[in-house]
Structures are given as structure tokens and as C-alpha cells.
Image 1 (cartoon, helix red, strand yellow):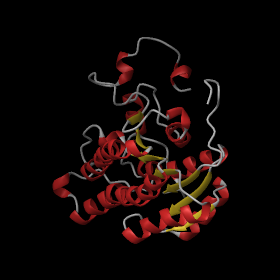
Image 2 (image 1 turned 30 degrees about the vertical axis):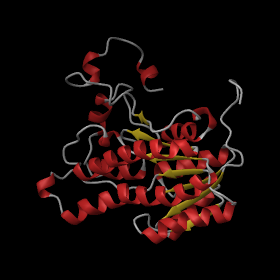
Image 3 (image 1 turned 60 degrees about the vertical axis):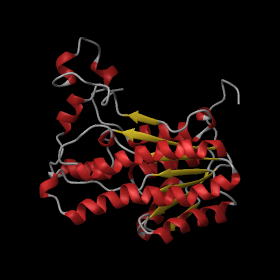
Length: 273
């Protein structure tokens, strides 16, 4: 490719887990727009059928990423439908409810870590075997800033997303010699249905989140999808075992108090662009 080429995924064969809503849905839509053939996987049939219509995805798979046989089937079915598997995006995930660890249900803690970490591992393993045999491929895992810093009340989600980061780095090193790249994005608070539902329940204070974020707002799902598309493309051909925060500056900010307290001018419109 030349320095002026745009991102082009024409002919790439992709599996997106959690592709029926939120970040996964936006990723599927963008990969389709960039030319990829996309299979989306989700736990429920009705929502995945609607998502196919919204995203233009070419194939749908109903399955649970926490079940080993389902994870194997997702990868095999995608490869069978498209004649191979080039791209995997692990976006299936569930949130937690801001409960201190000593008050949290052990069953809920296990459920959150099972979906976010165990499920990512199972699908990586299944898709990785196909990619390693072909000696090419790209995996992008969805982690979180909650997996980078400590967020009180979010021990299950944080532990799972930190595990995704370590898994990403390990697989990037293990699989790099075989031509398979593995990276992750770490979004901060993003206006997905999962976050919106928690905002409506009052679990998060949107104004406080905006004050804490240097760019002064929460992310839109498409902004996370663009980072995923970059990492999936040849533009990132020398990027592996890397975690890219897509967080509006959240993880970089280390001063006391809110970002707004230390702003030194500039246009609010620029910060919210």
C-alpha cells in the first residue's frame, strides 16, 4: 500500500462477537462499509436478525461466547461461510453495577468475568487456530480503561478487562511469528446501550464523567469502531501486542480534581468536536 491509500478491507473475512448492539454493532457496520465480509455473533436470535439489517452483515451466528462448543462453532461457521477467517473482533461483554467487592454476589462476579474474559479467551483460541494455519490474521479485543486503572465498585469488570489486556499482549507475542497480529482497544465511558441504561438508573453521573475527561464528553460507539478498523487494517501492519486507549485522554489525566478546574482557555466547541 502507498502512504495515501485509505483503509480498505475489501475481501477480508471477519467475525464480530457481540455484534448485535453497542460497539460491536458499530464495528460490524464499519467493517462492512470498508469492504469486509462480516459475520456477527450474539446470544439471542431476534436481536441479531435486526442487527444484520442495520449493519449489512453477511452472516449471523447465535451462540454464547462462554460455552466452548459455541465459541468453536462461531469461528468454524464464519470460516465455512466465507472460505476463511482474517479478522476477529471480540466485543461480547456485560457490565457490572458499582458494588463493593465484599457486598457483591459471587455468582454475579463470576458471570461478569466469564463473559468478558473467559469468552474472549475461548473465541481467540478458536479463531486463532484457523488464522495460525493460514499464517495471517488480525484479532482486536475490546478491553476498557476500567482494566487499566482501579475503579471502586467495579472489581469484576476491571479484573476481566485487565485480563483481556494481558491476554492480548501474550497472544500478540505468541502469534506474531506466524503472521497473526493481536491488539486491543480500551475505551472509556461510551454511549452504548449498556452505559446508557446505567446512566438512566443513576449509577453513573454523566456530568462528573465529562468533567473527568480531557475532551469533555463521553465517546460515541463509532469512534471506538474507527480505532478497531485501523488496528484490523494494513495501516497497522506493524502493530501487535498493543493496547490503544480510546478514552478522550482519561488515562493520561493524573492531576487532582476535574479537568475543567485546570483548563486554560480554548473553545468549548473544539473540545466537544
